[in-house]
Image 1 (cartoon, rainbow, N blue to C red):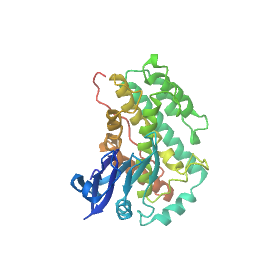
Image 2: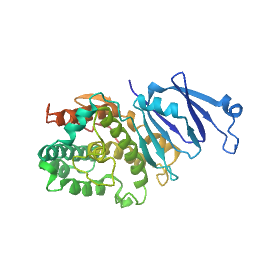
Image 3: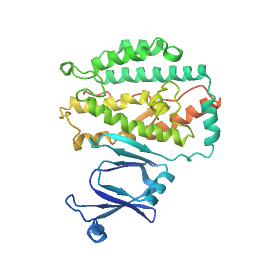
Length: 315
């Protein structure tokens, strides 16, 4: 079943009743959050249907019983800061019954194995970047060539070379775009989309019994989601495509408007091609993280990633 993404951007009181998420919205100028005042505005959603709950308002209150039920149903809970950017992530630490074994296998993974996994990851990322450029009728032969030449551990750092080329080509030339987390729009849109994607991947890793902190390539001591940042690399072009579509459609991308957020919040549910089948992205991520767990256990050496696919029609 496809899990739903629930976004709460207004003051609200969130609680649980009969395995339902109960949402009581509060009037913006209200200082008195009394039961009588909010009772008539309640909405309910089955907790088992929720995959992601995004909290984007400082006046949201969540009960402990609701938090526990959401986590028990493997719902990822994302909190946003005063700039409306995803800042924190809660997830279930005990979702997989073989978690201890998977942790041990992950910790014991050899350096050659991790380098091979990183090679597969970067190959898939560069190939997907090339296919995104194809969609917008931009030259992509360089990327396809580099994707074939990635070595174990990407010792030639083709990822960086490909990214430089990719960002020069993807958006309209007069935009003079430079990818920088703190840079000018549409960097803000990319940051938002990647944060959503990161929560999807972290959720998938936990569901597969893996620890998102221990990366195969990223190793920053300040990063609690190194493995999520590794595995999400081939998925980033799917976010890039959404942002590119917004730009080429002529929509104002200087701010994270309600319309743009709605489009980016669809990331977990967008269709992707994986193993010659079309699946929602969140399902594809679970397939990828499951294959990663199998690589750590020695059952296979192949990571399963989606291939970017698009309808061949005018953009």
